[in-house]
Image (cartoon, rainbow, N blue to C red; front, side):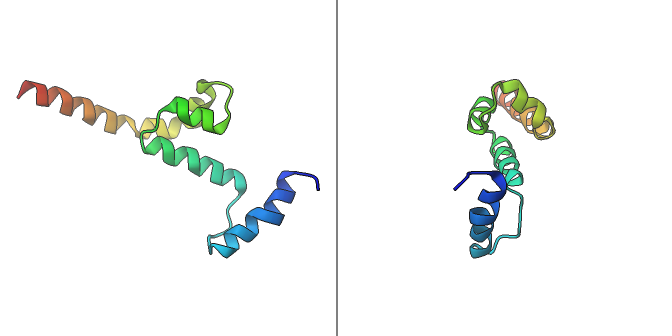
Length: 88
């Protein structure tokens, strides 16, 4: 049996989705969801990059910059809380 993305998708991935009653999703969409959820959970960019098999952390940062930008407010709030609690 030849391992290819279409073969993997139709033979294994789609039946798993059907059995789990999960809506049809592309295999690569699952990969992107995995990375996005980890980054949104404040997982370190290097860890996510390694899990995705990216050759550099920059590739991950460039690909998921939209997630990283949305995390800026949370980071600013954390810094403000740290600074504020030290003044009190």
